[in-house]
Image (cartoon, rainbow, N blue to C red; front, side, top):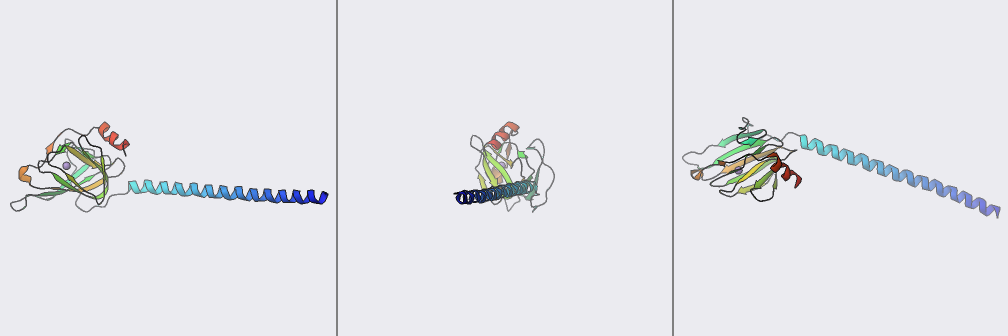
Length: 184
Ligand code: MN
């Protein structure tokens, strides 16, 4: 009988040792998972603060009457007697955006870097990012610009400028912009 008790006690001790091992292994897994997720967050933050790739000259800062924040529009193709099309680049720093506006002949946006927003009045925000091509229909009130955390680099193409280039309206308020941010 005493032998059996001794055996059972030994077995219990062994089991306890295993239990400790299992607890230790579990803790080790949890801790390494936490460390890994911390590193991932750090990478995300680093990615959002990285400089955008510059393809075209940055140009001069756009007027505060037409843009909120720091936006840098640069003309690349001026219209002439042969081409009735304007092409240009706008570099928006994070948080920067155009005023509300419309284009009598429409506009095509080609996003070359970063993340931003395009919104047609009365419609939900559209997230635009590197590689996206967006058509803004003629005479439709809209705005475009960078996201709050990441800048945006976009080419614009305005065709048929004999119909007009752009009609400017009021600024996109912080409230309108932050509603868009919370919808993401
Ligand atoms: Mn536009």
